[in-house]
Image (tube, rainbow, N blue to C red; front, side):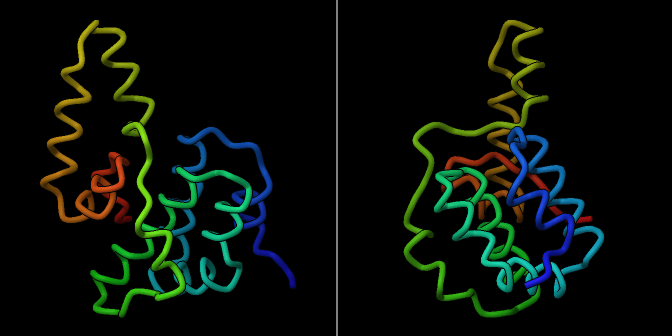
Length: 138
């Protein structure tokens, strides 16, 4: 199987969570909805990340797939049903939110990001699994 170079980087490289988010969102922006969904499923990205114990990364891709599927009225992929029952122990925030709170010596940015995520169409797919993400749309 010939790997797409970006898929290879996402699956093989030791990326920080924010580097990973950036790569996967760029892949979505570049490929568009259909090709992105096709690659995620073809290369079994969610399960490969899960097997490597990169749980946050696997769940992030899973909820991208679910959101894109929902938005495009495509049925959810049933192969992820078991993984959909998992959530992260601690809420995962983007690095910029954490940094702003450290600079300001507060939790205001985390609270605001959490609320914004809860109320965004996209964020609802992520927040119930303790991942703060407001938008993945290109």
